[in-house]
Length: 462
Ligand code: SF4
Image (cartoon, rainbow, N blue to C red; front, side):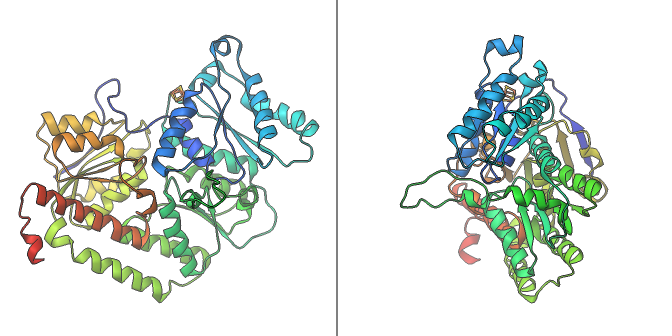
């Protein structure tokens, strides 16, 4: 019995698990109110990412592109940033924040985005928009390294580096949710509210579960304000739920302003939600109220109904964002399932030092493989050619054909999940998330039992 961690051994990628860094920076940007990002690159760097995010959230929102053409590769294109900032500000009088997100092409050209932002701050913004408080944020996303995950992390760090400013203590905690769904934010806010903890929820996308109102306004935007970001330096502490999606920003606030940081674990499952509540208690001194003990009890009761009878020993493959994959694997182990294959889709060299992965290596009592820099072929190849037997796949919609082609049931989780209705509304975090995940897994297995006529009669007598 072992837990082996290794890199994908092939060159090239077949059916990638992630897209590139600017996608993560764009996802972070939509969590800011009065913000429209400008992606400094070819139009496709926005078009396809925006489509993916819109497919996932089923909402409409604005992101701009500096829209480079061939001449930019020879002569550079910072003038396109200057024009784009002017156009966005002219067209959208409410805009207060413009992240300028670089891409592979503009990083290779060597466009001086920090320099052009200094020039715009001293020139255009003072001369033409002196009556507006506009913040330009340079976000460097060379997409020939890292992934959408590092892009999200880098963007959060750039936002707090540019905006956070010490004033007087605000008595709040900073909560960096990581790359979550609106339903996760609702679940987290519920826990904070029951604990009576005042928090600044950062890069807050709860409002992307938007109503369609009589005035037919169908453009969504996030809820974190410029003032929220400035005030992060005055918080009593930061909790970054996901190490790889907000950890850098939390560390920056700690080192620059002395705001203590607790990084992780993602509150997926009972034990990680318990740790999150303990961390809130440690940071604020607020007790964990009986109401949450009761919610925990309801979750444990729901899981107990399922674990021994239906979930125990089921073999699972999980792919997606590292904090999500690790959190799901921990939860599966608590449910007595066997996460035999974990696929992490980028080349982050620090995964090997992650204490949660070390814990798998020390404690796992079944054979588990963790593949870094992985793609979906690593999953498909093992199923088709190497005899891997699975009872379940957990991952985003890009892997749906592995499930369909091989008749393996799948629970959609992560980003993007566009082929099932309303998943963005259901949390995977907190006690509510534990219930939803376990019951979704169980119901998916039940449907599979029925279609395959595999002990489906048990459901008659359960
Ligand atoms: S890889 Fe480069 S060109 Fe392609 S979408 Fe990403 S940033 Fe744009």
